[in-house]
Length: 236
Length: 274
Ligand SMILES: Nc1ncnc2c1ncn2[C@@H]1O[C@H](COP(=O)(O)OP(=O)(O)OP(=O)(O)O)[C@@H](O)[C@H]1O
Ligand SMILES: [Mg+2]
Image (cartoon, chains in turn red, purple):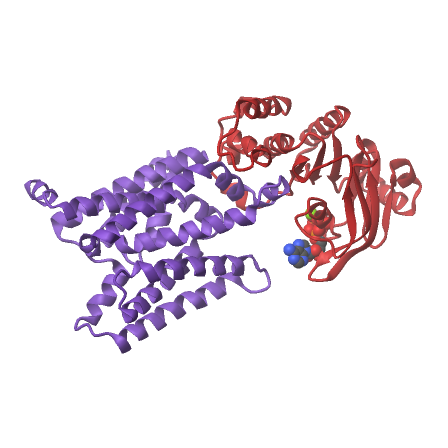
């Protein structure tokens, strides 16, 4: 059974559809890359998958007993966070919230899990540092550690590499790839089609037309050929 | 100094000091959340609503104005929060409308129905607090203490949740936290705090009580916990100092406390630079 199955989804705000009739499935262990131009509705799709916004039509079914609080989420960064006084530890711990219910304090096991995830993302060294004083790449890794605390099964990443330099971007991609190999299903929004084709197992393209398939199929599709050609021209 | 000790002999002065410090402490705790969630304007709007409610309480001649003011302010807080989340209607414009509206209607009502010979004095003390902290009735003192302790307890119990929802609401929701419920909780606590703080500093100066300690603490500290603790400590100290000064120098309580807070803010700003 698939982990996540979207059927005939229409997405938008105030009954204004941005994307119509979108269908795709995600199986456990998949690495799905969502690509498309600015404003094509990628973030909206992620939010709908997280049940933060309601789809205008269609349905999403969550298989394998996947619960809402078993999904980890890395948001596209907002401005408000930037001047927030919060230490790295506090932020990573906040990823445990979904497990707590009404319980006010974290248990020892939960703290241990947070510590492991900080270790995994290589942010243990600045656990007590202020989040806003970290570099963009370090911040993303902190948010990834938080997302991992929230969920072990599936991660939804909204442009995890935006604003990062090429070296840090490559680091981030290999970190995500490592998580995927450890068995975590990945759904990632990205503008970087080259990287998408390189790392992902499946591609979902949204724009004027919609494409969903494996990356091999994407390479052969019209959208894929057009995009890859464009990228090649840009990078020489 | 002798004068202070002499004053402290009076139980009502001691009550006032205790109540004042508790109120300031409560107000400061949510300050960080309000500033960061861009909610501070809601606090401001609510304080004006509370002013209007006081005018109505005056007309109804209820014994303790809090009985009217508390529910009215809590309900307004919930409504304002709903408005703020509705992207269609300009949230801040709606709040500005409600807040000046409440101010104007409140003053109008006071003027029409007032039996007091000193209307200007009444209005002034509602707006700026004057010495009302020393004239609290026993019921009000008890109510203030109970509410403050309640606010403190709720804040400590939900501390981790309030942090999570303040830092990143979308993430909290995605992890299955009922962010809407916590926003509601925050709004209700703000309303309670505003009604409490009204007794101390009057409705125009409440925002200062909420915002200054948080802003001062944010200059000095970098984690949410340390900022929260620091703003609590600063608020209590400023309130105590402000009240003592106002008793000794005969200045209005509210503005003296806010004056001390402004001073502390500048000190923190200088310290934070280095
Ligand atoms: N809360 C909202 N209310 C109404 N319209 C919105 C809202 N959020 C986004 N939109 C609109 O929906 C469209 C899709 O937005 P979305 O954020 O999903 O795009 P995106 O693909 O993530 O873009 P980007 O690559 O820039 O992140 C845009 O036209 C945007 O203006
Ligand atoms: Mg986006």
